[in-house]
Structures are given as structure tokens and as C-alpha cells.
Length: 381
Image (cartoon, rainbow, N blue to C red):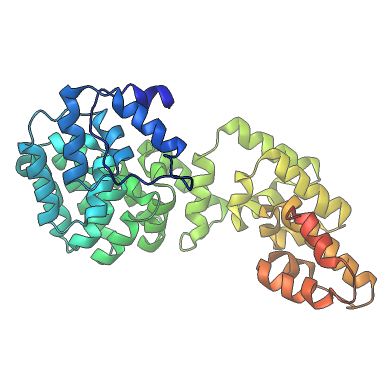
């Protein structure tokens, strides 16, 4: 990183209001920046000055951006920035956009950018929300208007009942990826889910959670949807799409290896299928985690297979950071005769704050050092 920043061919004078360290001298970071700035060429100083003065970028961000573009003229960048402001983008959103995609300053504002932005406002997305969406992933403005943005937005409108639903989808962590991976197969795969009874609300959640799954080859996707349905998944349940994701997201040899782990503990094919249908995320766990969980519950806790089948969520819990520490506390409480019977399942699945209140803090005076022992078990101490 040191070599990268110092080789940026830019120049800008150092402003006099630079903060200093507590002893009145420039901090290490400031000295580092000044050293880098002193090596920047004069030929591109206007780029750096322009970015700092017009885009709201910090000096560090401006240096990084200026290393990627060369603004020979301010005409086009001025028009781009003005377009963003005309659409109501905040200065912080504009700064984020330029930092993440500097080349947009050289785009054609009215021929290329404006029509793309108007697609979003045309369905009722406010300027504020649009600024947030674009700042999260400015690459949207580099995608094709006719091949991706328009058909993608049409698809989203077809099952999102309101613009607020689209906004929620596009501002979540992965929902915005729909534009990156959009293809005709997405529409085909969504229709495959709909035809098999999957509600649009669950499809929306799938786009937010695993948008890439919908871009899989249509024939393969349809085959897995039908397979999941035949396994006993209810299309109306969110577990249906979890099941689709679990199968499509795993190579066949991995699936076979995980099935072998379950069988090594005595589970039959039917029991493994039941487990998967109830909690498909079980198959997303590593083989080692599955093995440790089954060993703990079946061998140490002496639970029956039926009990695990009825409560498969326990296989998703961390053995080291949750199951073992909580079981230790419960055994201490029972051993001291403070309670006669405890629901291990309830204790293992309740929120951390409630567990602390009901089992740790409540009995810390009866069992000296209980809090410290529990904290040590979960790795806090």
C-alpha cells in the first residue's frame, strides 16, 4: 500500500490547517502523506485539487481516486456532479460514488447517466433513496440500460408490490447484486419458483440473500426445484428456497460426504431427508461441525436421533461458544440442587441476554465464580 500511494503521479499544496499530534508536531500519518504529496507530479495536480474542492472527498480518498483517472478538463466532471445534485444526491453519497467508481466523472451525464437514473425515479424511488442505492454500488451506472437495468427493474416490479419493497431489496447487503448478475435466466428461474407455488415474498428474500442462485442455468435450476418439492418441502415455507440454495450451492461430492457423516452416527436416508427438510441449513455446515455436533448430542448428552430430528436447529449452534458453555452452567445449577429440571433445548436456543439473566446472574451468589467460569468458557476471559 505504501508503494502504491507514494507512486501516485499527483501534486497538491499542503493546507495550513493540518492537525498535529499532541506534542505539536505532525503525526506519522501526516508526515507520510506529506512525503507522498511532495513526490506528486505537477501535471496532474489539477485532478487532485478538483476532487478535493468539488467532490467533498478527503485528501486520502482524493489521492486514491486521482490515481485512477486524469481530468484534463473540468467540463464533463462538473456536469456529472451537477446531475447527481439535480437528482438530490447528498454530498456524502456523491463522495461515496466517486470514491467507489471514479470513472463515472468521465461518463456522458445526459446521454448515459440520466436515462439510467430516471428508470429508478420513474417507479417512485425518491431522490434520497436513489442516492443511497447508487452509492452502495455505483457499478449500476456502468451496466447496460437496455440489457440489464430496464428488464431487471421490470422484473422486480412484477413481484415487489411497492417501490418501498424494491428499495428495501436494493439497499440490503446483497440485493443490489441483482443488477450485476442479471440475465434472462433469472426471469425464467423466478417463474419456475412461482409455478411451483413459492410466494413472491419468499422470492424477494431469496434475491436479498442469494441473488446469484437465480442466475444458474435454467434447466439445472428447474430440476433442483422439482427435486426439493419431491423431498417434501412446502413451497409456501421459507425453507423451500433454503433447500434450493443448499443443493445448488454444494458440489455433489460434498453432499455425499456430509450424508456419510450422518450415516456414521446411525441416521438412515429417510432420517437425513427429514432433517434436511426441517432445517436445510444443516447441510450448509462443514463436515467437521456436523460431526462434532452429533457426537456431543448423541454420545455425550445421550439424546436420541428422534430428539435431534424434532429440533434440528441445535445442529446450527456453535458447540464451543454456545452449547458447551451453556450445558456446563446448567449442569452446575442442577448439581447444586437449585433447580430440579431444565429444558436444555430452550436454554440452548434462547437469546444470550436471557440466558445470562435466567441461569448465570440468577445463581451467581449460590455458585461462587459462576459468571467468571461461563465467561471463560465462551472465550470472553
